[in-house]
Image (cartoon, rainbow, N blue to C red; front, top):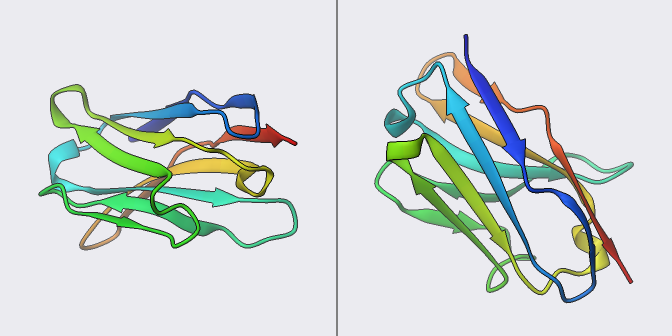
Length: 116
């Protein structure tokens, strides 16, 4: 059974930092592209950052220079370091694992709230 378990969310003031973690089980972690998505109330889910099996990264324009995604294959874990947080970053953050074929898995989400 595939499980993606996010942690690290919470309440932080503008300008603060948080580090999200996503621990995966039930998959060959190194074979998956890992991503972080977020969904704010009333908005569609959007890609925040992704990291390929070789470590290549991609970021949404709104977080470039502030957020950093990384993976630790030995621990089956992907991280999202979030710095200089602003209220617009408030959302539920979801971890995603995907690879070619019908392999697309989601975590349950973790709430990030940035107060002004």
